[in-house]
Image (tube, rainbow, N blue to C red; front, side, top):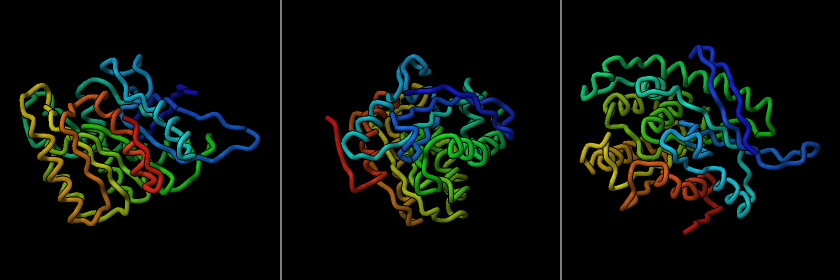
Length: 266
């Protein structure tokens, strides 16, 4: 079952749309679940809601994983602010190191920082009060792709009690690499696990550069190594920068969350 809700984020000063994927359960004898949060939430469950007409179809894989491993997760998809600048402001808490786009000159890092604070201090309490979920860091996980993968990393390091596992798919860290790495060094190991994914056929905004995401992800991998952050690096030979590609990595990400329960679907 998927429910759509609105929740007001006070620091962000806007209503945020949520889609909540709730497994079937007995309300009289509920089974308490872990929680997997999705950034860019309109792209999580339904193709009809997705920005480019294609979601990662996460509900299907949450059900499949639960069926085979008996780990049930509540899926909470958080819609982004929409528009290029709105999403950039919401998802990038660091200064952009390139001026390739005039639009980016209007980027405001505080908007993202406010959003992440709302995520932790408004969304967590709402979910943990209203749904049968287990509380605390070890029961919370976060998925983000591209810009949202930077948001996921920032939130994990800024709020070390927020998430046990981060899925950073096709991280756009090249936009703010030095500031991101300096921030991570300053904060130190948040004792969370990070799932890093990148494809070898990824390009940025249509530019023919199939090394940008790959090489920056390798640098991020080395940075996590230096900080002794437990992580897994997955590289797809034919992976492109899209939801259809990220969908194919979801079971690997879910398996990484629990480690002892590993399944793959060809």
